[in-house]
Length: 368
Image 1 (cartoon, rainbow, N blue to C red):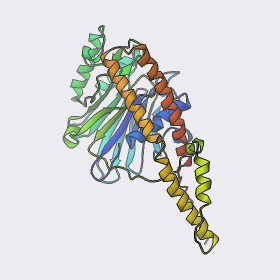
Image 2: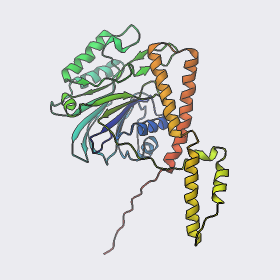
Image 3: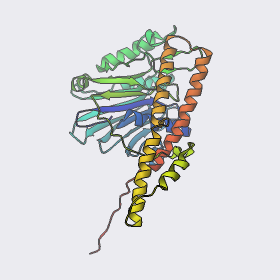
Image 4: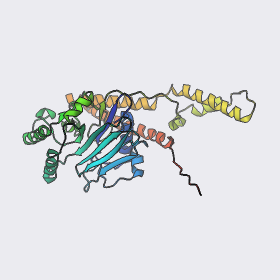
């Protein structure tokens, strides 16, 4: 969740289906940045351990706190990360199918609870998950949000095909009623999961629920879908209030050197005569000219962030279209190509993280 003085919060939720490749790590990092969140929740990590070095690979460096539930074998696993400069976190539950953290805002001391879940699909583990959820103690005065992949749907309309399990629907709705939870509906889409076939099965099994008091405190809570560059689940952004836009700054992008004309521009700009009284002033003036020239030149390129955004927008259109009718073979193949292109662009974005400034604290000791 992203917090500022206007009361804006954002969190990001995604079942990633395994963190077994750099492409998926790059996709997660890109989605975290895109959502501008301060808390992220990931299900089905398929990892039994996390350390700070892996978290730095997975998330921007502002996310310095995390809690995880390890996977059992090659399935399950939950990860929640947050920015401690925005919220302090206290772990309340850590189960194989749920992690709960009590957050306190550093800015105004507001307290709220967040639970992220991964509901097992079948067997005794599914029954245990239902029992745990049904017995969750939610005080009527608490601000509590529960997000994640429940592996349940609430009605037959949450599938695009016949054959839903009415018993599961009744069990899930009974749990929601017993806890007094309120659903935050998905805005602009009907489903959060696809089997990715040419004639797909679509379902909504990822949900956001809140306590009744939450709605009174944060009445403008929204669940917004994001483009799905990998996994068969749609990443979602939970947004409360408004956000302050980021200021635009000039940054040198490493991929610029691969573009034709870059070296020629640098050479011609550097060879411009400048008036200076000494070498230091001359070099400083040349760097200023080069910065201005690159900034102007970069506007003629296809902006990387803008390209990723445009590709994600087209991907969202295809995912939405899939809910209305089966994709034709050209559309289906185009979506595959587009996803590969997005992952390639995200590798370029990874260079940004390598170049990003890191603050390293130094502790000075004094002798008596």
